[in-house]
Image 1 (cartoon, rainbow, N blue to C red):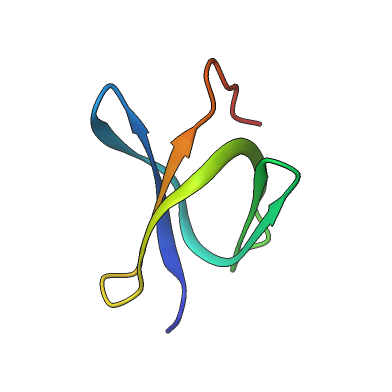
Image 2: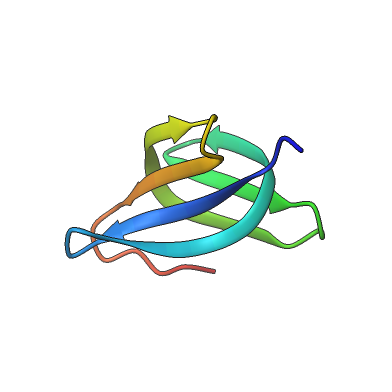
Length: 68
């Protein structure tokens, strides 16, 4: 399995954003995520870390970002 869980940093803590992400597309200051179940989210964030061995995607949200 190649998918990973996506987390965002909030108040210096990691919070789960989406499980089993298999598609990550940076576009115009946002990150588009899609899971193996077809769940989709687009958030204003940047990739802080990809840890593929541990199947983790760490994102930093833009200031006052709302998650769709």
